Picture 1: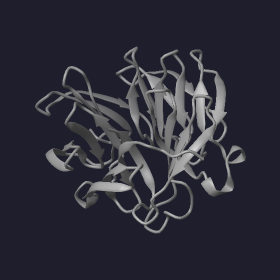
Picture 2 (picture 1 turned 180 degrees about the vertical axis):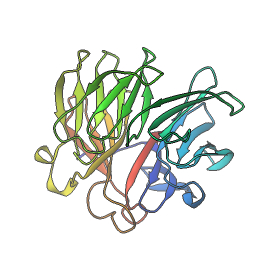
Picture 3 (picture 1 turned 90 degrees about the vertical axis):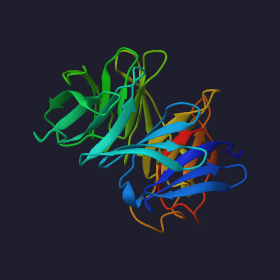
Picture 4 (picture 1 turned 135 degrees about the vertical axis):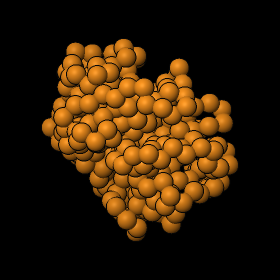
Length: 272
């Protein structure tokens, strides 16, 4: 298989560490121990210097070249996703963030004050993404809810095998792409919400890849796709399967990368 040649920020959930990694050289430029930032799951590039990282108690801003934490907002429990809008507001998604139980999306102003609280019943949520249409895509275990900013459901996306589905994004053609979590495949829905493609499953890949849990993914400029293949909680998972997978524009696996001596379970990735 071909090599993977990228610089990326990678969350090793198993060892609770965040790394800046060059896959070509194998260099780990820096490592941040996440003991003070437990269950970091979400990352967003803010500008040339800064990255937003969401974790269980809130979020922090990071200088990505050095790994230096610039600011830290820790005010909650069970935060699962964070998004910085173009207007400077921050959307914080999680469970029971306002004390009512269920799923919340909080809107914070640039100073960190809560401007708005959206609530809906539910017992699970992972990453949330805002679509170009201004709707929200919420990963809610075995399906994806597309909602208004008030969390009123507009429609849902589901496919056999979704279990702890991790991340959904709206594509340029109006479709939606989803990583299936423990289903260990990627699903693509058309603009009408119909399942039109499923790729990366165990039946299509070499046994050595060992698809287990497809978590965060990212797109390269040429349309190829990187997927984090998480292998389980805790240490000593690095040898169980390929940690980073690259699919070409035809959605065929063309490359893998792993660093089993340094990473146990790759969950989050952000290209820099």
